[in-house]
Image (cartoon, rainbow, N blue to C red; front, side, top):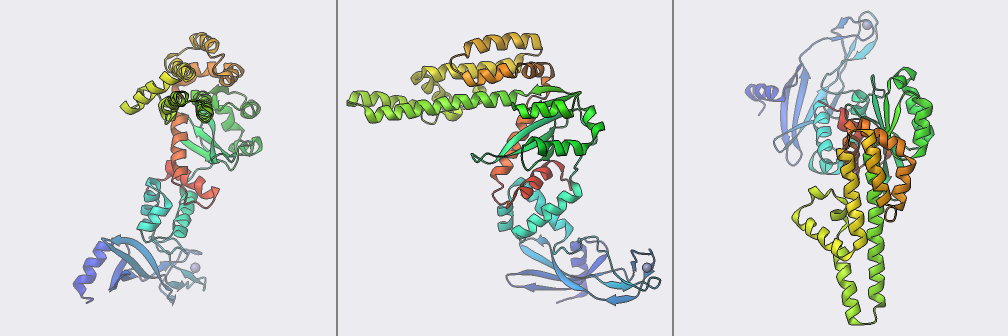
Length: 415
Ligand SMILES: [Zn+2]
């Protein structure tokens, strides 16, 4: 069974430098077990750097490796201890394919992380041979090896936030490099203290380089930026303005739906009831047709939009105003024209967007600054969407730290 030819082929297939297969066995329903051995008969003492041949102890254990076809592969390895002739102390040899105290090869960890980045922990754990705990350990190790904690150069910073658990007010702040479309940090909260600590850890020199900071429409961020990054122009990214406007539009949609549902209950005649039912039909499932960019709607959504505009004059006006301000952001490239266009919009929006209108007026300087600096349009939105996607697929994460690592790896892991 363990013919020389088999052994040679398996060693070639295994493709691990510095080891050879000495035997193999197949276990029904478990996989293939390969006993492997280092081809070096010596190792270098980490204390003095001398080679030693003196074997002190064998330390055999089993680790997981990449599967071969459908078969799970286990490696029985021997991490030998040598004794140094000079130091007279024992030391363990380094095996370059497995990290110390890990029960899987480095290449299995890399492959697994790649898979997790394309899906989520649970499905990878279900399909493969590694457990959820092992994957979390792999992610943590990778984050130590590949995640930067401090950017070396930064010109334009974005501060955004993402809700960890929707509706529970559990937010974390997100720091973004706008020029490179990269996530810089995810923080466990969004308070001024938490952000301040990270920014301060970057050092004054770096903070002084920053020319522009894009923030969401929260005053706490503004005063923080003014305090810590004095050279930067504060800009309100269009994404945050549009989020606010969409929120107000959606609230109106919900309000109208509730109102008509109420009217149906109170209807005094069948005719009256039928009329309200017709309105309700128009309002149903209209959220995305109303909120999505109009040019991105499919035929069905376009029909729905038409239908909802037929039954609700208010939503019709609000939708048109929403599309209008989006156009202003899209097409205006200088601040004076931007100010002029926004002024007209604010007049028209007085009745239907009271909340957004107030916000825009309060933040007008920062929004106008966007028109001059708006080259990053889409960066914050893109990163925010990506984070939401990770969050949705991250139900396998037991805590914030795992979520953070998973997000950062998305931008920094390469193997
Ligand atoms: Zn030594």
